[in-house]
Image (cartoon, rainbow, N blue to C red; front, side, top):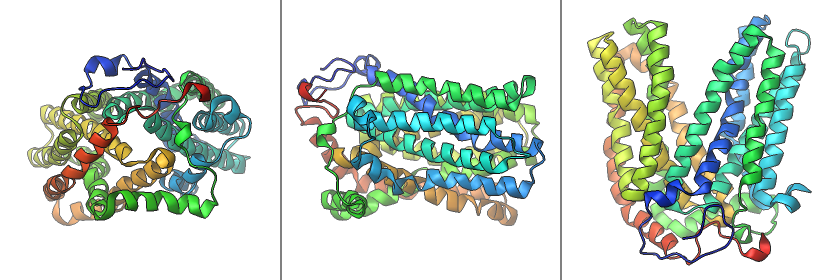
Length: 448
């Protein structure tokens, strides 16, 4: 096996099973921690944290709600993902390569946007606040695209679960900094200092970018007209997968649907049952975060021991069935022990299933289209949950919490059937990647 973070290609046996030690000593897994931190940091800073500042400044709830539309940058990032796949950042690409050049560009732009928010005054210069928030959202979404592309380029499919787990750990730590951390600074100093501090923390991602090895850029396509750069990734998926792509896309679209619906209705359920905000914060927002991280690493470990398909199947079953815990909680009432058990099961299942899905979607991509194809697939898996989650409140009003959560748990039944339909294709894809003499991400010495 090649050494961690080495750019020198070394042949690997297609028959050798990847050991846990191989994964845990891989420097690329460790690098996903600062890159995940850099991706997670901006998210709350243009949403809930910024909303708190705006409301404190006397901005109307209507205007604050309209500002949430900056989230569309994350939903439609696939529209400019082809640019990341096909074009270089002038200057930076020559020094760092295409992927890392885009990574650094996005991180610098995100930091500048946060500085812009810090220097603005929502009471007198709201337009600057909005413009800076838009810059942060677009730059942050671009960073997500390029980090995913780099991750897929540098590691084989069986390593993707553990890399995703490391990424999620960094991401969740960043959410703590951007949420609680920024609010603490704003409380004891001021909002400007809070956003300046968050901008300074983007250096964590910059360090990760500089330490990261180059990806397999020799496999990237040459520049094409932009329309072709959008169409070709889709055409490539259809050429390689054929009709089996239909159940593949159906599986991706529905895989996290129970989790998304639970995410929308969980807090209203806790409040309606009579749990205190302290109980909710302690169990859901603190304890639950770490259980989710454990679940993510368990999913990554399962990928190395059980393989991709079995991990995907287990993830589909436990992620859907975890909603039965919410139905049970809704029937039993405000029992703190049952709340803790529900959060434990749900967050572990969500972390496990997340690692499995990320690894699966990563394995579906082609080296030259990795960023664009992954952006398309990740947008697909989030869209149905957002649409159906928006109607979940009406279902609760009409039929109650138990029926909603039991119904979403039932989604696990067709998910199991879809897993068996795509089983042969999944096994074939993994074997094809194992049979390559050089793992994805190996770069000839001359191109380093």
